[in-house]
Length: 187
Image (cartoon, rainbow, N blue to C red; front, side, top):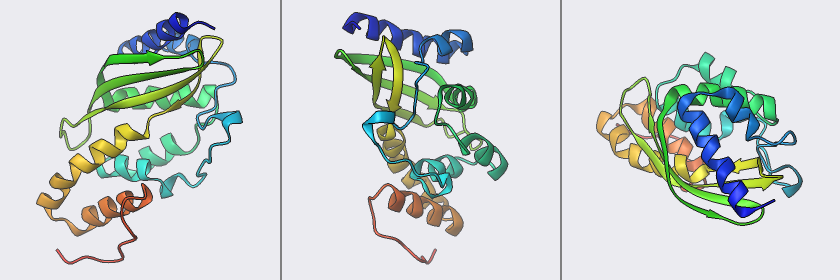
């Protein structure tokens, strides 16, 4: 495994997402891919409806059928590729800037525009961490992307002043561990 080889793989990963070239995308993913880090023993919340990421995507206006289909499972290479086919329809204009690499990890500062039903044009900008094996992606961690945009989205949620949307927003913040549980609000 080489640092330069890992960087090249990540460049191809983003090129494939931008162009929706799924054969190229698949070539960047290790056969032992596991979204939560596999042998690194990260916790996976099997109830995807109780995650901050799920509620963040729901806030953007996607219906329950779309959400349940696409968030039901993505713990192996095949499922990760299928999820990214959907993600590439809502995340457009992939771009990345700074890249830092080690023998088994690559950090990329990336940005992407959200193509959401509310057409807000929100941008996700943050570092994403890739764990590498044999110059292929073994795991991908990027919660900071959604968290930053979720915080920015808060001002729009509050301006619209819709109780259901505000509660979903507050629940998402709670699930990220940023605020205590909120049971009710007055709009």
